[in-house]
Length: 118
Image (tube, rainbow, N blue to C red; front, side):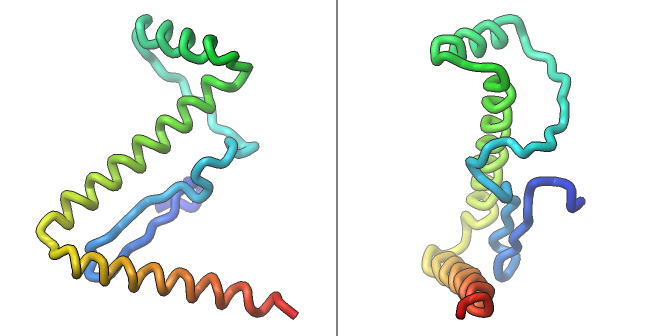
């Protein structure tokens, strides 16, 4: 996966869990933005602009809304793909895989914090 994308890949044990996650979920748009040209129906445009306008939208809120919607859609689809892929796996086995992965991440974060402390 190209390094320029704002997603990282996590591959779990036994190739059961694989996730592309935004590096900064919920964070404000990065300073360096990419311009998109998109086409939507007039109905969708009016509905979204009315929705945003009713909430006091400011300049840039349409872009923020689209970015958040894309992130949520990617996340939701990824979760669904994982569910489909692991549908035949026993819940206890999945929990073991998750616990092991979480333990490794916590150990890695803990190890990174320790050298800087005095």
